[in-house]
View 1 (cartoon, rainbow, N blue to C red):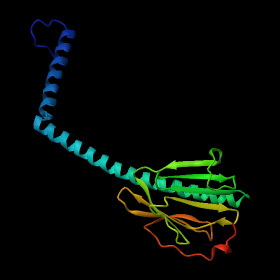
View 2 (cartoon, rainbow, N blue to C red):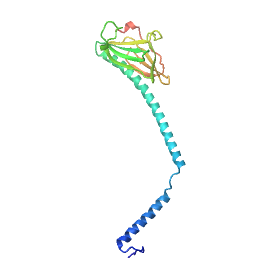
View 3 (spheres, one colour):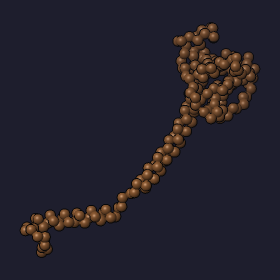
View 4 (spheres, helix red, strand yellow):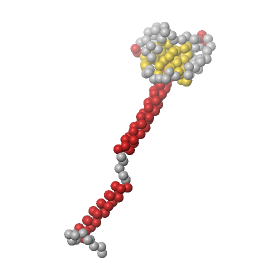
Length: 210
């Protein structure tokens, strides 16, 4: 039977309490010796490294978001053009996508008036503006009509038989790299392609009724 040699401890309970306290002190001392504290210099180095990794991750994330923003805006334009062609093909209604280079915007409307130059509020279906990540450079129709300083608005009209004119809408991303939204009036397809692509010239315009 072990005995307690600590003076003034006269019962087993007091002896057990002393042994537990002594064991706790020895254990704490071993832990402190096994895990030395970091110095201030080491902490500063760790904080700087973590900050650098966070900064690099943010830059990479912003680049990805920028690319997605351009592609999202370009794809919205493609979807709008496809919507116009599909709606016209399924009905006897006519639709028009107006590309405005001055306002850097586009509008989809249903044509309800014989006066095509008049845009009524109730005709507007979609109206969107581009951000600085996606800018319209120029528009070229497949009859070689092109937007210039005097003609900053281009109009693609779709009827039951298809597009009245095909062409391309050249967009620039924030790095000024060109992409082309190609409108093919022969098969109604609207596609986004990388680069300033060439146009396939169609048959005569009078062969495609509108």
